[in-house]
Length: 208
Image 1 (cartoon, rainbow, N blue to C red):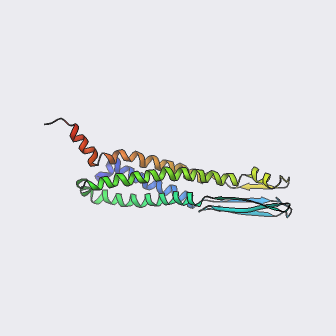
Image 2 (cartoon, rainbow, N blue to C red):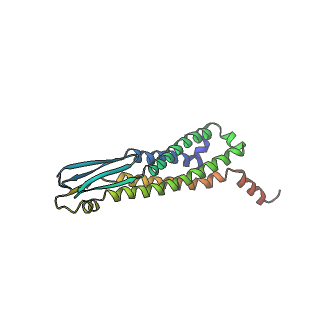
Image 3 (cartoon, one colour):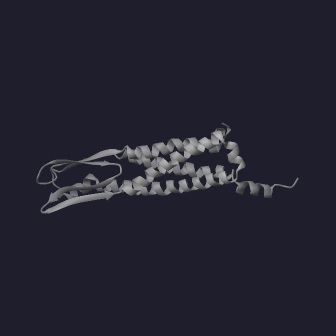
């Protein structure tokens, strides 16, 4: 288990753990928007927000007009979750490689190169996925803002709007950007295993 005493092995374990944290906090999120007495019907209405976050709802009726909001951010959420799942699967695969065939890994120049390039791709996925999901999360918060909803529904004094906490989604974003940092910083350790780095070292080493 020598590879797991090196930075590349330690990083894979951390990536495995935090990939699970990122997508689990997203898919397990659920909250509720509740409205009381916000139109002439004086009803209590509830709307659930949960993965994959295709939120669209008619909130109230002002005069002859239905007032609706929507935040269809399922593509952002699904890309973020897919990145987490792909990262998890790749970590499992490469941990097995490190644990059982590390000699082959070091003897075949193509394997470290593939490891480096796939890690680069996943680092880019984490950055773009986290940025997109941050935008999606802001959209969800915006359309469920109690002040904006009361304004939309005519600022009735009787209108009471409450929405649950979005803290778990904020945590998922923290995990997302943390994963980007882990995958991006791992590139240096993987680069040192590639033929590119080793050839450069050989070229700059003094002759014997």
